[in-house]
Image (cartoon, rainbow, N blue to C red):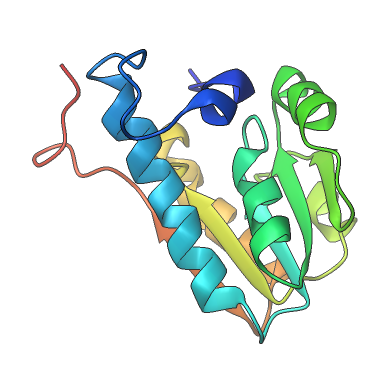
Length: 158
């Protein structure tokens, strides 16, 4: 079942905010830190970025704000894409509902120079991971890919 962290949480979050519960706060802060890292890596040498499994769109918006690239946020979840479109309207960022496990749908997207896909693999059935990675390769045949996923032995939310 897909996780969904609402856009309002990202928009109101600051690391020192006492309003954020102890569990959610580190997850949001760690997730945001990944986008900070990606923006530094992608800035200057990337014209088109895909945020694969964008969720509420905060990360795609952040990448558009902190790089010179055009950014597409991609997610299978209609609700997430609608939320992203509602909260994050800025030049150089767009959101698209696409099943990243479907080669035909991925073939309909313009190619990109770089992809960020954070906390995605653990939501994909193990047998579908090769197809997911192959589709990311179709989307970005010669560029950069940054993936992250939790290691349950090290990071287990309680």
